[in-house]
Image 1 (tube, rainbow, N blue to C red):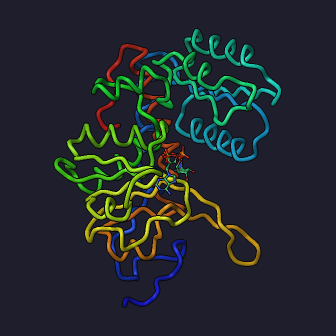
Image 2 (cartoon, rainbow, N blue to C red):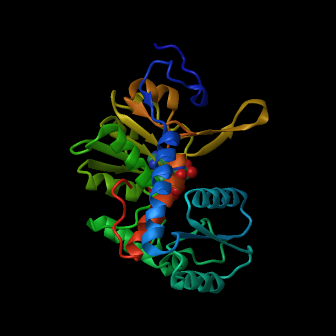
Length: 310
Ligand code: NDP
């Protein structure tokens, strides 16, 4: 039996096991590439790329996300438009704002922060966003384009996962990929992206029979479940690459909470060739890809080709 590994947040390069994929560093690199490409867009289009973020209500986590998105957008040299609406906002008011942003020529990307309060028809709001400005990639037109292999705005988190995988593995062609989770935000688009890279893709979910055995056949495991450390080390095929999308808060020391993923990091790392940590793996990629999607949308709207390095 190998010695007990330290907890995820303390795991460094010194313990036995696969590489820890540094999503934070990769995301910083992507943000820098986006920032470096902005001046050429400004020179060609005569304006900055613009991202509008809409927040309804006071949800503390959403407030933090929206604040981080604004800071990152401005740091990349783009225009940030923030719209904060009260918790009691109705669907009609939000839809009117989305229509206004659709018409606004200075807005290239529209992001409506989820979750929305219960009185708002979330589907109707997402459907109202101009697909060309849908930098979250949640519109049915973009989901459909992704499914049939046409260029689309792709949801940020799965696209970030794909970037980490390609950076690590190069070609993914022919590899067995198991995606655990089938949400429209992560699992399904992740599976489509892997299929487009010629992986053999299995999508597992809560009704999957013998999940450990299904995961064991994977060269690539993407976990997007929302259950702390559910995927154990002995489910991981030796040499697999593991991408952990999960963000779960669990009780930590001294009454504090700590973040863990959907994968039991220490035991999975002993078998994996490479694995993303939580925090510091997939998480930082999401905002970096949002900036990338905004710049790509801006180029498309201005009739320009997006920079190849994005
Ligand atoms: P959802 O709750 O929408 O989907 C969870 C999926 O996991 C469902 O498909 C569900 O199956 C499946 N599932 C639940 N329990 C089990 C089980 N016991 N065995 C197998 N499958 C199971 O979550 P999301 O996709 O939105 O998010 C997943 C995780 O990723 C969360 O921890 C979330 O916080 C995190 N996340 C992180 C992001 C980032 O930026 N890093 C961005 C988005 C999400 P079924 O469909 O059958 O119910």
